[in-house]
Image (cartoon, rainbow, N blue to C red; front, side, top):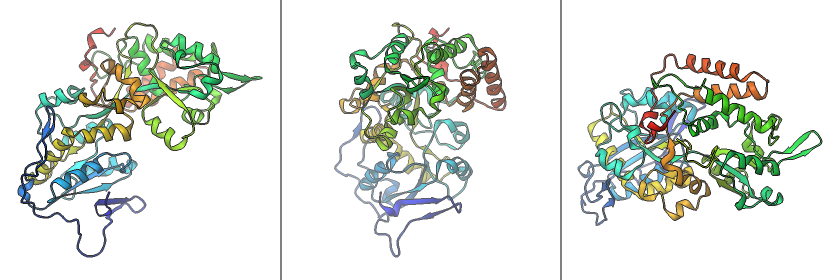
Length: 461
C-alpha cells in the first residue's frame, strides 16, 4: 500500500492524521476520459464491466475505514486494482485499532461529513451499524447464485447490506511429530469422539502424578465447542422464540459431562495445563486441540517449526448430524447511507468490483485462512491445499450460523466449564447459573436467532 493512502489512527492521542509528504500529491485522482478500458468483464452471476467511467470521469476521493492492515484485510489490494482501472478515483484508508473502532465508527457514520463511505464490517456489531448502512445495489438472485449463505444477511426489507466473503468453523489441529512418536499416522485420524479418545490416550504422557503431554487439550475452547457439540445432537442455541438462550438444557449437560470425562475418566488432558491451549500446542505439549482457521496464521507467525495437520471435528457416531458445527463469516465492506449520492455511487461500483473479482476472494481466503463463500472457488485445488480449508469444505452444507450472537453466549458458558472442571461444582447448578448470566446480559438485546434459516432446520430436536 502506498503511504499516501494510509491514514494512521494515533490511539495515544485519540487523533487521526494522514501520512502524506510535502507538496503536490503525485497520486492524486485525475480526470478519466477513457470509458473503454479494453478489459474483460469479470464474474459469473454478479458481473463487473470495467469499461465505463465512474463519477463521469471526474476526480473524487472516498474513504475506507478498517481495523486491519494489508496482511489481514484484502481490501487494500482491491483498492490498488480498482484505482488502476479508474484513475479518477482515490480511496484513502483509515486504520483504527479494534478496541477503538467500534466506538469511533458508529459515532462517525451518524451523518458526519468526514465519515467514511466504505468501512470494514464485523457481523458481531451488526445491530450497531446496520441502521447506517446502504443496501447493496446488486440483484439478490445474482448474489445467491454466486455466494453461499446470502439468505442469512437478507433483512426484513429484503435488503442485503453485506455478505460473507469467506467462512470458517472449528476443526482439530494435531501435532504430526507427536503422532509419529506414538506410532500413529494419518490412517489413525478419528471420525468419532470415541475414536478420538482412544487416539488421545496414546498421545498422553504422565510422569509420576504430573501430566507432561496432553492428548487432547480443551482448556479455553469450551466457549466455542459447546455450540458445535449441541448442534451435532440437533439442539439449537436458542429456544423457539429465537430470543431466549437454550443453554440450560439436557444436551448441554450431557455434553459438559462428556467433556469432563475426557479429563476425569479418560485422563487425556488436565485443567492444570493452563488456559492457553494455543500456546501449549505451539510448544509441543498438547497433541491435539480444537481451533478455528485463524490459528493457522498464529502457527505460521509464532510456531513455524510445528509440523501439524488438521482433521474435521469428530461426531458422536457415523451418521450425518443435524449440523457439524457453527460457522462464522468474514464480512464484505459496508456503505455509509448518510454520505453523498456521488460517494455512494463510487462505493456501490467498488463493491460490485470486488464481488465479481476472484482475486478478492482468493486473497481473503489466504490471509484469513477461511473457505471462500464464493461457490465457484469452493473446490479450487490451490485453496484446498490449506489443510484447514480441506477439512471443512466437505461439511459446508451442514454448518449453521445462529446469527451475530451476543458475546455472552461464549463468555457465560465458559464460566460453567470452569465451575465444573476447576471448582467441582455440580453440572446442573453450573449450567443454570450460566443460563441466568446469559439472560441477564440479553435483557435489552434485540437479537433474534437466524437458526431457522438453516437449510436443515426442520431436522432439529
